[in-house]
Length: 274
Image (cartoon, rainbow, N blue to C red; front, top):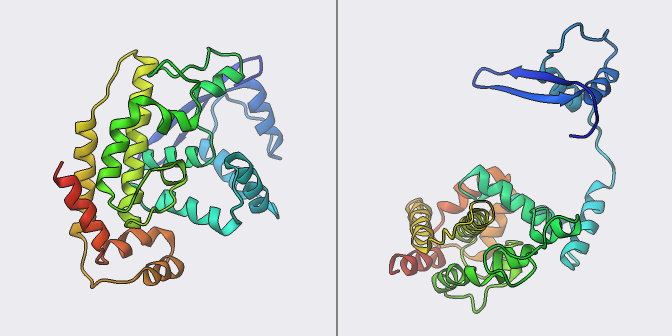
């Protein structure tokens, strides 16, 4: 956080947890200007009050979706509509098995993951991939292009019979490559998180923690979980899309999990054989 001066203690309490952070003097002064109440006579104040104030002062900006769409299309060299991007963002939060996976997918979709190339652009380091030590590390190289990812990619390809070749749109953007949409959403998040952890071990701990066995084990567990929830008869693709259209994204995982999917069962059978 920028700005000189004193640092203040800022705390807030909720029934289940307590949070404590520090903010600079300039940030306190700015927050104080937001309220008409007299300045605090103490260095401690309620974090919940700050959150409520920010929320109550939030104003929806007309056209923000269009601005975001243009920005994302420019970053990914695409021509997607606002609805297509909205669907991608909903899939981020609907299918992964853990919040940490969702957060990483959100960063990936924004191309906001910290990479060697980003650091190089800011004059930090040489930008070389810490695993293969041969290429500049951008987001595509980090998750797909690095030679250390080849075994992970091969496992995904072998478990997905309809995929001829995995591309960045399948893995980074979440485009459904003609496989079960639910299981692919889960597997994609597991894949990206595994690569992210492996890369960070190489970068910060100078260790090569490549564990394809653990990756396959995670795929098997998720496949069993997604297949054990099947209750209803087979449906065609149009019914799947109708469910996603009619229900809120929070209900997608449960609703799609109960539908019979031959593709999902085939993916499960393939990963079990590994």
